[in-house]
Length: 548
Image (tube, rainbow, N blue to C red; front, side, top):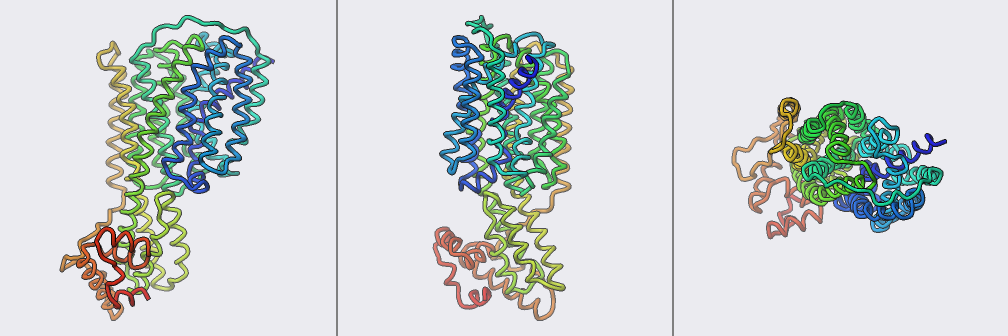
């Protein structure tokens, strides 16, 4: 009876750790349903992580006085109740309150699990193996589990599914009653490994957060497909965790591989999931090497007090990374979406379609492209307009639609690039903290560094060779600007319409793409007037006639 109870408690510990990221693939539907922003949905992860970090030390203190069985059972019951609360939340504010309570219960469950499993024993003991598996797999597998539940059922199913597991684990805690462990002696915390643990934890959580947000919200990848794709990372982590050797080498090499994985994700040439596999293998292998080498290797983890300090170090780093990266990604995605809309309009205007059709089509296609779910809006608009084009125009329409889609995919990738490079930089900094000025065998570390540099160089070269060419927004005031020149009367009308647009845009000081959007949409017209000081809809009757 003891072994199944230990496994249940370990599963609950993994669940508490996974909850820092389990909602990652649910963030896009949460973003849409609760009408929030990228920064808002990042708080769904950040609040849980922050409260967990704040609650771990008080939970350890309670476990020493009341006993881990009592504290663990109570904490996991709170976790279960808060999970149901999260599932029933109808606003972002309510969801964040329940997430905070969930984290408080999770903190108590984590520290109790450590003592009840005797996870501070030798590496070969069952409790120690279960704790390491919970720490590695729970941290990395959260997005895959959450993504599968979101796609098969709903984002609320993520929280509903956790409740019975937590209740069963609470009962298991009660069956594993042991006396309060008291206040154990703790060794001084080595500053280098502690800082490295916080940095690499921040890097890994940010990688998962950014990757699923880019795939599902940015590129409109099916959540189940994305869940299967990101399962590469936890599998690689579990495999690499079995590698032995010098803890200093494993920790530094692991951080370097995480850095390389994060940097490679900054250079995905298109929205294919296949491009994410190699970077995830690198980051996952790095995680499997670094985490066990740091927690329990370079940093003692012999008691719940030790475990508490390491958990705090991990989650403080995660909170700091989310606070910095979420607003950066939100701002970049907003700017990139605006650039993509203008480039998309340029593609439509240059397509060999009739001038009336495409001048009306351009704003119609791009109006639904918003920073929350840009590609989903574009695909809906492309499908809605497809039936309006037949025969020769149908082929031109499909070519134009694919080119606009490529433009948007490029823009989304660019919006996430700097954030991925920052995550890679965090892990690289962790490696430098471990290596510079420390007695670390450099030969094996150099091999990991060489592999990382080669992987990043290959990613950059692939991105440059495979990525579709960017669309330039040209000045409307250039006299010899290229025109579609499709021939015939229709071609002359088309070229004349574009020349007229260019002249009007040149007079306003805008691009012709901005002018087309402003003529068709009131909100765009207001923005145009704020930017250029004139109402674009007073441009004259001929421009109005172009829009029908």
